[in-house]
Image (cartoon, rainbow, N blue to C red; front, side):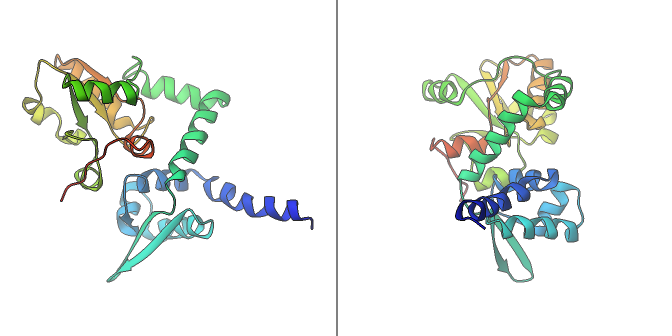
Length: 218
């Protein structure tokens, strides 16, 4: 076997690891912060055994790292560039897979077809104090890291906590990524209640990957 073929065979291990839908979903969850196997199983709708098998595949390819705490094993991304890899896969699939384009249009864009706000524009408006930034992810993901001075109201709590949002400012909602349904749902519900609302173009992982300001809960 030639040097180059052997090299490509090793590179293909990463392709094999990300070549499965559940594993891509797990990587997106881990892009929000470290998770136990049990937490990932609950988020993914998989059994703990199946989740563990997927994580072993990702670990074999060097995409995740693990640590043990008592009886529980916790996983995290091994490299922040994995967020970039997920973004490349998303953008290529949007451009070249008709099925992906149809799903995005028929499921997501029916909830909100307005152009989302680029992160640079949001950062400028945050500095001007002209927007309310709304994080609609679960509390534990918000605690692991979030946009500065953002409100955390998980989607399931939004309708009963609308009174916490200033009614006279635009609300910009964000969640796990560009395809995260939470922000699409949040914007639709906010507009129904009379708020001016937009989505952030991407999610928290991409914001952090761009080396923009991030806060964590103590």
